[in-house]
Image (cartoon, rainbow, N blue to C red; front, side, top):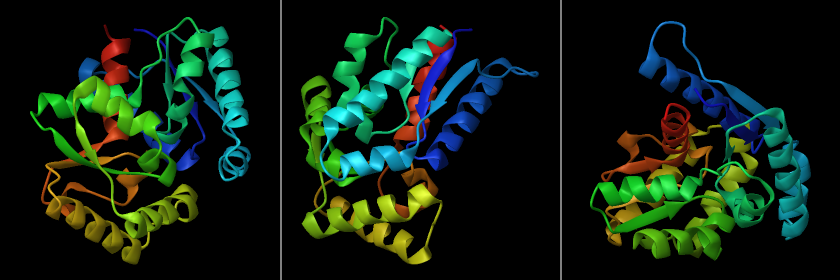
Length: 230
């Protein structure tokens, strides 16, 4: 079994789900007392938040580079960035390490393509929804037509993630707002919806949508387990 390296802490709430999922998936595959071989480097989310909120992406990327290099030195055989937004740093990270970076958008794009879908909605932070690093990758590599919510809905989705979910807060009224946002994407033609933030599995479930949901946290973990056991 290969050792998975995980950059976590973005937020620690979703990192806890990564840890649980990776171990459960390995155990489901191998049985007995088997669990994942895993190295975790968890950053201080407050440091990252301060940087991204003032568009200091170079400094935010430096945090990712440091974490990636630490995990490689510690013996990781592959690397996961446990956040959709910080895959903005993926190209620079790949240049500084010699182990594979398992990209969350690639794993998600492959899953959607396998379902035969082409037009999908995307939910996440404003950075993930609005910057080209994520939507552009899905379009160019997988031929997907990626839709994002309108400006008001993007603001609501981002605010709930940044001010509630990363702090472990799951409010019924926020869940209802996400249901409305998903419904609007479906009404606009989305065949499926990407939960493009690793905290969204905390608040959105399959029952909240009339079309398939693609939970990037679970998909990312499944891709890592496939690699670890290959």
